[in-house]
Image 1 (cartoon, rainbow, N blue to C red):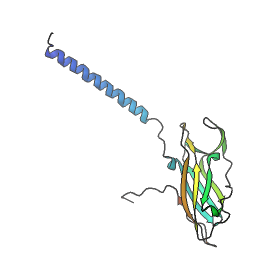
Image 2 (cartoon, one colour; image 1 turned 180 degrees about the horizontal axis):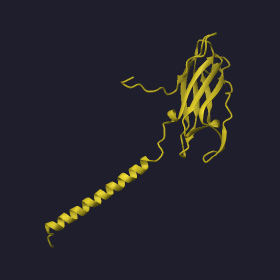
Image 3 (spheres, rainbow, N blue to C red; image 1 turned 120 degrees about the vertical axis):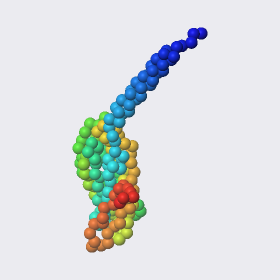
Image 4 (cartoon, rainbow, N blue to C red; image 1 turned 135 degrees about the vertical axis):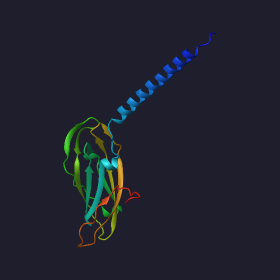
Length: 177
């Protein structure tokens, strides 16, 4: 077996290092391409939910849908606990009908959406837990799984104005705020 000269070993090592460098460069390009793809918001930020009680008999539910996202009208469901408060039929805006690649012809919402939910037996000065089911998608072609969110809403006493809005996902506190 023939021994390699030191120059041959250096050349082989240099080729290997060059190959590793090319591999790392290719991985960097792939990572950059992946990172340049759509940056999706978490569902609670893409479809921000808040609600308030206008009075003991009416809840106002608001979605603020981020730009580049939409909610499905027929995927919105609302309930209250205790069930004795008696959630009625929600007053949903009509929405914009689109041909959706996932669900066919459907009504969707973009931007702010306000829904009124009547309560048959809300107790003034009490509270209810609002349960909201929803589903939406990003224009980038990604649909989120169905979401369920719960908010506890105080019902204003008789003669008082509406309660303050309650955010389903309030901003997280940091050390600086």
